[in-house]
Image 1 (cartoon, rainbow, N blue to C red):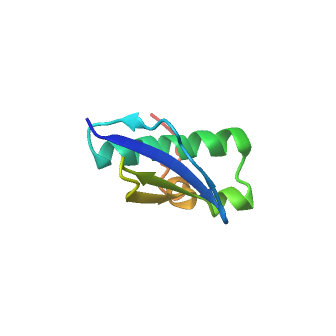
Image 2 (image 1 turned 90 degrees about the vertical axis):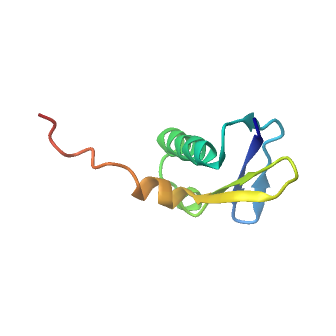
Length: 85
């Protein structure tokens, strides 16, 4: 399985994921990135700097596989105010 690294860019600062994670494919990496963003926002709140942050998912060669803006993950959430029947 390919290894993906989930680096976080906040402004000019890059927080590097030194270990990475073995995942099936880039789609699975997208799901993991989305979950990570939602967890960070849940614990840290929707701070302006975080809303502009991006998770850069790279492969073992350091090539960017995908960039996932924190704001995109928040916009993609289902409406939790809807009544469930």
